[in-house]
Image (cartoon, rainbow, N blue to C red; front, side):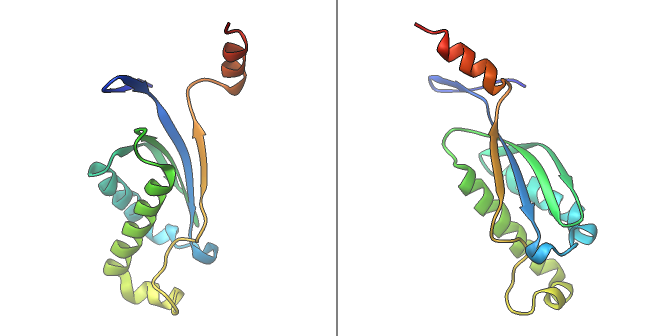
Length: 131
């Protein structure tokens, strides 16, 4: 994977993100491809992109490439909020059968792991060998 360059910096910031449907409902069997499309659409007008994304029955895995000016939390909030609104606009009748108290789709939490193209051991060795 190539490094990005902006101003005086060079970077490669990758996040492994996992979102889970509220109450672990298996809604992505019905709306998974649509959710992926919505995520891709959101990314086209944002400061991040998807390297890869896959859907399971009740959760979605993605590898997100980002710049240093946007936090993982900002990415997560944008994806979850905008996708929930769009899914409810398109499928209000069906979703209201699952979530009768509130307009929700994703669970409150998420998983995020920052990754790079070097292992922890390689970076540790490089740092320890300096000076």
